[in-house]
Length: 262
Length: 129
Image (cartoon, rainbow over all chains, first blue to last red; front, top):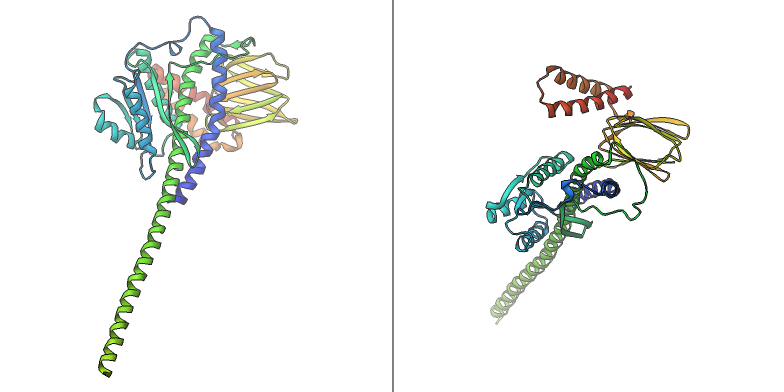
């Protein structure tokens, strides 16, 4: 089980790392375009309608991965208790989180993506992102947050909460670079923003997948170690018991023989 | 001049080139060294670049192009080299889209998607052997 997770982890980690440059470059482009457009910003860049927020919680479909899902749920719950998270609605990606929120916050559950064959992919990411963006635009969600696990290494994954909408466009420090735009900056901004949201959800899903396999590998490793410790202890105990019974028998035989001689 | 092609799945190209032709959303455009700082859309189509005197082609599925300093960065939704494309499969894909369009039953949003797919399918067929 540890070996299986290790192999899957390697692939997932590669996918997450390969996707990072795209997201970074997109963010840079977005920063320069939004500084150029300046006035008349896109609705995605403006504060929401004041309606309750929406949280997309990305967990795993399967268990046996230590505290991975519990930590994510804890992170989401902490948000619900905070001010901005009051009456927030939930979108669950992954069965583990879905099971929990169905039991504890059914009234707030908005949408569920569970047991998707083949795990998370670009199509699913754009579906999740697209629907969330629609709700933000229509005003039924005041803001959209993502809860997922950031992958650091096989033994270090951190649950994080990031805001997806409204988009926080970092203004580029060297904004004085004059671009030649084609098409108009405002049209570019519109499509860049949509793409940015998708890319962000996709990246979160990849990080989550890598984290899940990392967590499972660590959990399975310590499970295997615990089992072998247990075997050692039990073997020792068994040998002692056997030795004790042999000794008792010997004593009885010797005692019997002595008595006969007498 | 540096050419970088990045997709959400992986970085595809990162190499020194002398000339690039990009299928821009407002029409094809060429990029040579010392090009002005530029930011624009990319349509589904074929991008060609010259690397060490050799002309190579990549099929792009839309995205963005940025020229900044001496680097051209293409952020594409997907990118494929001709040798990765199966000619028969590409042709079948094109036929499917053409038939769907000929049906005329698609709603406007669907038609948009189909037209986009058509451009990509044509590009794939044109570079596949």
